[in-house]
Image 1 (cartoon, one colour):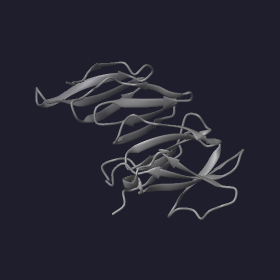
Image 2 (spheres, rainbow, N blue to C red; image 1 turned 90 degrees about the horizontal axis):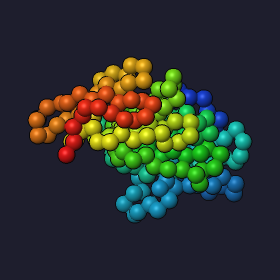
Image 3 (cartoon, rainbow, N blue to C red; image 1 turned 60 degrees about the vertical axis):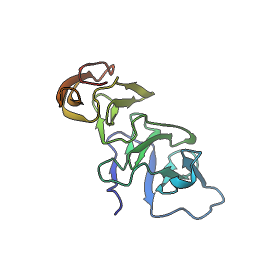
Length: 192
């Protein structure tokens, strides 16, 4: 069974994107890009997308799958930068410039288990098992220090604060934490 794939375009975008069912046929103009560029033989499953920027040529991308599971995120979403898109394939997140697909980076959380767009703060949040990262209009804004031994839960986002819990293995319980969404600094939480 394939993981559920969602589209989320909270932020304005300067491109159109659609998911392809398989690899595109060779095309004289549209180039195929691979993310990551150095795909190992075992990484042959993933998601194909076709991207058509408002300016510049259309292109296709193959985004290597992290995990074949519904417990991780699989999505395409717009970013706070209207020229960038985010593709998450089985929890592995890639941020790519739609107008220059050679410009890209991978989000640290592998896998991404929660993805949230915060339009008011111009942030896209990526939650992993131990940390949270945010990208803003200029790219990566911050990554928290470790919030948990294993397992982060977002409880509430209120204004510029994120409230959550992280697992403390020694105390054998969830410990609350608060993250400042402007800086990524946090209080509370647990970690080795």
